[in-house]
Length: 466
Image (cartoon, rainbow, N blue to C red; front, side):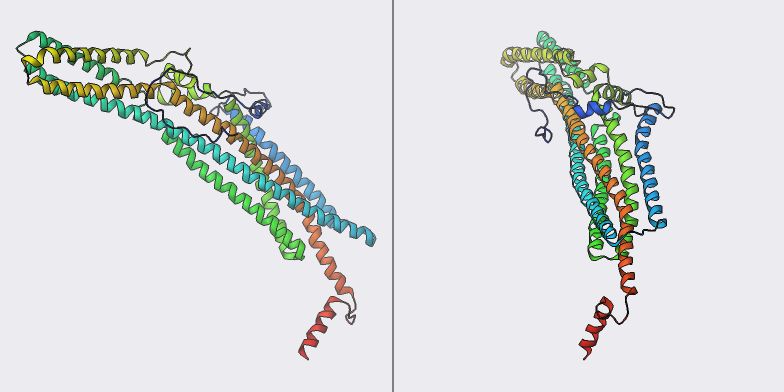
């Protein structure tokens, strides 16, 4: 997955020929999860199209999440049956059978802890992958916001520069050349074309400040991701601490520690099944979005920003078959700037010999025109679909590749953790019962038996006091 952590920058200067950047293709696990049955609370099939605002679709995700609740109920029943049998049924087995059973209990606890530790490692990896994917989304959103802000800034600076030139240098040039009506007509034509260029460019920015930029969405996504990442880190550390202290209690045969870890294991068992339900719903919902994201992104963006479908289709598809909605206005500006150049060269050739005072104004207008053309070419490069479409594709790859993969690993972690702690809750009570039985066996021995641990301890204390 070397392409996943690729970082992209803002497109540079130069327009170039429009191309088709490497697109996005849904992965096979996205396709498999998208095929999961979507059933509402009335057990009726609903569409698998991503529609988080639709109540029927929400019911389908909640129904999938409730599967982990059913698994939790089954595990509770198994735990209760096992503990009732353990508490109420007396064992009259021989000594060899008891020894084998104790060994089985101990190794089942150890196996559960080992499986849980493996799940914790998977969980750390999944949490990191999910974090990488989400932050690729925020990075792409901020990059797209930078492009949109650059378009707004470039257009406003260019329009302001042209307006200042029309009000200042061209007006002064017209007054200087007033004795020659033919030259005045050329200056007025130049002014009209400069005003037309300024008005045309002023209509180019399509993402106003009132609509809210992608930076706001990136900030919200990053804020939620920080808390999600921290919550999983705490859950993973809690699982790891319980596993380590469980092993310590079993190794040192500390009864109170094993009892505390049993209670904590039951608490984490609830958290594991709950997180598994959330991850199942999130994975299926994300697969529905990643299976065909263009439609939802276009409809949602158009509803919230009011952008025209032509502009959205142009940037989401970025194909030569799609019409460029800015082409006509940019062509008009290019032609107007070329005409202004020709008229200024004519004025420089004819007006300066007769009106030397007009040279300064003509040179100032030419300098403004050169700056305007440079800004115009930069604007053409920014308006090209390749930059924003690449940000869009990178965001999809981060969310639907890294994000989906990490979410599946977190789902596997929750499942392994739930199975491990279910086994631990069943096995640990028999373990501390074994500790109690061993102590009671010591108590049943004769007090004057020197080979008992209690008598040996008293003998050592008596010897040290002499």
